Amino acid sequence: MNYTMKQRMATATLAAALLFSSISVPAVLAAQAGEVQSSVNMRTSPSTTGSIIRSLKKGEQVTVVEKVNAYWYKITDSSGRTGYISTSSQYIELQSSAPEQSGSEATVKVSVSFRKAASTSGERIRYLKKGEKVTILAKTNSYWYEVKDGNGVRGFVSTQSSYLNVTGTIPGSGTGTGNNGSNGGTVTVPDESKDEAVEKVIAAGMKYLGTPYEYGSDRNTTTTFDCSDFVRQAFLDGVGLKLPADSRQQAQYVKDNGSTTTNWKELERGDLVFFMDYKGTSASAYSGINKSTQTISHDGIYLGDGKVLHTYSKESGGVTVSSIAGTHWEYRLVFGGSAL
Image (cartoon, rainbow, N blue to C red; front, side, top):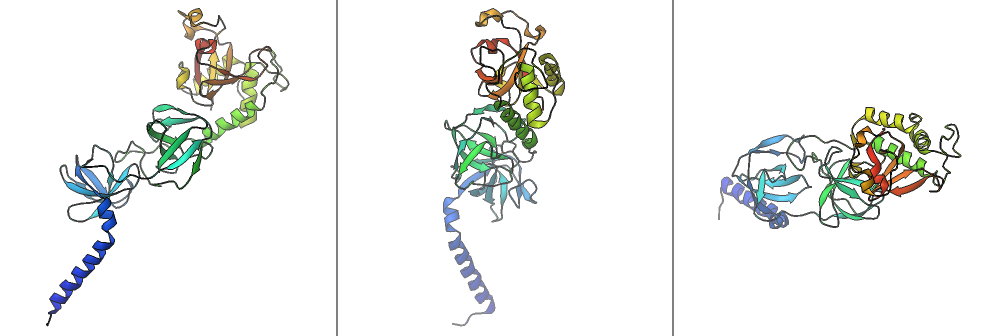
């Protein structure tokens, strides 16, 4: 049979199409259909810095080929073009679940904030505790992991090695924006220098556990401490920051430095906590008191998980760690905040 040049080219094109189609079958089998919910940019890479291929319109049908990470789908539009769009439900609705990533297991090394967004300004869900197991779903960027805790709650944790001990390969090292999956927005990275400073201060303070208490202790020695002397020494040893000499001045320093909170559950690891005078062990002993007008008489360093590192009496054994919740420390708390 004689073929024209046009027929031969058509045959070759069809053969090539079949060949490449067979190669991509696994991806097609794993793909899911989706409908665009509102106009969204289709990009050349899974990043807001990727070039815009075009804008997908509301009601348009696409095929989700792959979930690249928590923020980006790889998709194919009706004309066969491939690109990337946000995973946010405001932009796309899947007819069935998109292919999920397998996660890496991780163990929490030290208490760390578990947040709703990949940002230090993201609302804290809670503190993850030392020894707790989590699953890393994706590496959002160089600074944040998206993780799932043992209860199935999803959130974000700093990628700093001081917080998580990771086993296995971390999935989806993407370039998401950290804006709860929305298209656009900015990433607020963890302030690594501050995080490192906090750990240095706490490590310096922990070295003095058991050091005897002495009211009005000599600020030029480390043989004894009162509360503010201990706090001052921990910051001096840890990061070279020389805080004021007494608790009231330290409280003013923290107020001048930034925001404070009167709720101990909102405190960050490394915050300074300030207390009024002791009036008893029960909550009723402090009822009706306007704490904002009370004189600061004690302070310490918040460790996370409701613990404070401080020193307050000879009988307590000097520098020690105490629980705040349900104790007179909770009832006496005036406020807390960062000195860094």
